[in-house]
Length: 362
Image (cartoon, rainbow, N blue to C red; front, side):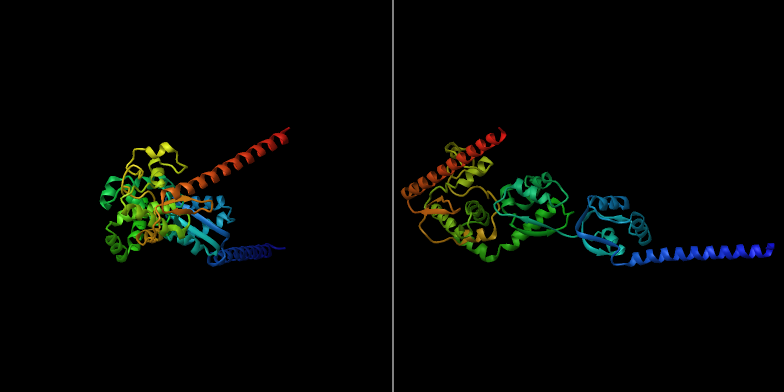
């Protein structure tokens, strides 16, 4: 083979190699470009929550995806993010499920298009329990939201005491963003409370001769007492009867509030010197002892008309209502007998379990 033929052969081989390389590069680029626009480039088998407590970049995103067990090609993710320009991500909570294109997946976090989180406020709660449940769904810790209730500047701005502020934490389900501030969330709930109180409610309170804050204070006692919704208006009527007769409310929940814990009360507990102890102080307590629901506030505004003055718990979770103290004593003794029997059964079961454990160990 002469030199000319050899050169020609080499040129042909080079052209062929370059063509093959070009085909491969084109195929790879075409594949990647197809993946770039594909609606199934990123797939989540189940709902995945990604949260960024601060502005983050690609490395943080990839590490978070790995931590969540999401299978994704690192090189392709970085390539797509660089091509599209979605390389930094805003603070927030983002929820993904199903399939996404790289553009849809990355752009949401770059633009900060968060998914709201659901916060459930339960009635009859306490500030610590409320703070713990809310902070568990948002970025701040419970001490930050708890501090709002003792923030003198904030309380003065709202014209409320700590108890009055918490009494307005309307039980409901709230949608809010993960990055909402503690004060922002409290303001949101306050607006919900204010929106739920109608002119009819205010007119009824005035008709009864009490302010809205006093109605909420009484409703908070009813909320604590009423395990059954159908008893709310009846319990409300009982306390109104006591107030109208000039009797002390003698509401056990106010003593529990004064003690700072929910438990069965002892004789000496009723003697605690505290402004919320309605066994020692006449009239309503200085503020709510918990956060009543709207239905409880309405049951307080529109009590059942009856002559009951006393009540005692029954085994069914409700109460036995009586008109005289003598009747109350009889029903209270029945309740004590039932409680003693429950304690006896519990001790017996614990003894039998302990004996069974010892027999098994031997």
